Length: 558
Image (cartoon, rainbow, N blue to C red; front, side, top):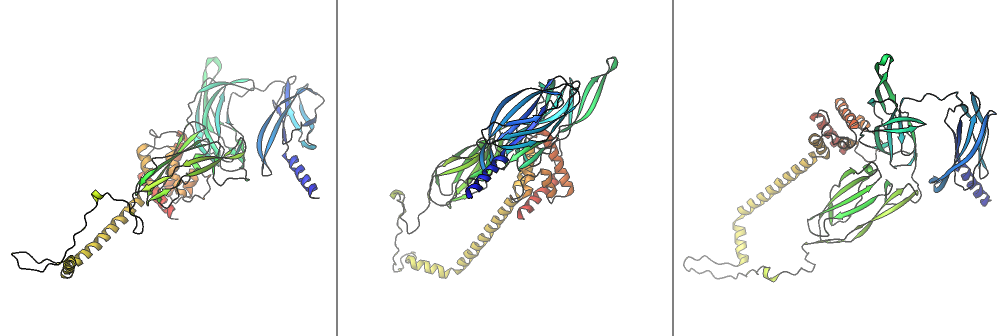
């Protein structure tokens, strides 16, 4: 009975693993011309599918061809499974101009039969007039894993000689980490559906999905202005509101089985390189380490791992810098700072960091060799063996003072032993001891005041204040503004897929400040992700930046 249940379970997995779809190309064929009926069938088995359908009486089946097989890895039932996609194409031809319906479409694989809906289409007398101007969003992939990067390009296709495009609404691209790229505006000639178009890249970004399921790539909207010829050789300037149709992306979850403990969250192959300034240090000396991570993943959300975890070291805040090398690859540099506190040796170690490989659908690891650190120059305790001291530099022993009977010889004062001299000085000079005590307490209070004042100064000199100064001095761009506004979020356990405008709406800023920073976000999105911001036209409002810094400080306390 147990084996029968296992067989039924596996059989259900095979049946539900099959997927089949059918499409017509072109969707509106012309009478007397051939068109194709294409079947895309996904299966985990090796058997060839058996396809059947009932064409109308006035539609002739000219032939059949197997266009090929593609292989990919998917997650089925919590396991990584190799999936095959078979493409079978039938060539058809219609004899009359009318509406047709193809019925009884069935696909059989491994004994499982899948029935597809009937396909209805119109056959035209002549080809439809091609569109003269349209927008289209073209993703580099339509099926990706969670956190896997892909590109989205918004194009304008035109048959006009010269078209000007003025953007009215940029895509929001919710639930994605975004890297915007500069668009140079170069035109190219392409062939689309047998028609020749001039194609212009309007907008380009690298996206990293942060949510599984069906995600929507929303529209790019603009006003297109172009010239057309009227009668008698006159030229007319026309204006048209344009937008690209939305595109759906399927985001697959990462496998939950065999997830390594050292998984970084990065998708795609990455390189990790560690460098330390030296390996031998003295007490209270600074250790500087640099970790360079390079690859195609979403490094914006990647935090540097712990390099050293030892009580002999005091660690400070890790600084990071993200650099985009090309459209697909970026580099993030982490600068670590430690201060040696006590002597001893920190042993070497191997630090493992894992990433997910979308090609093989497996987790892979890379190892970083962390060298041993030797800390010396710390004074030994009383119960430890003293370090050898150079005899030439050793201090001379103090001479013992022996009491000498006082004698009245000339003007010489009485001579006492060392003990007796100290006792006489202590008891006969109480006012000096009281003064020294008061002075010591005063120095302690003054040092405490300086320390508190220093802490207060450091508290005021927050990261938000530094970022505000950087925007004021170096200019406004998307990276600087994103880092500044993102500080308002506070806790890291908040959802990652929020926009800057959402962060501003949820903050404690005044309405005027929110509107001001939303306008800066709009300016940065129009400039693009890589813009340096030196020529950005905006007004630096000191009061609003000061209000944001105070809001960040309050958010940290929460």
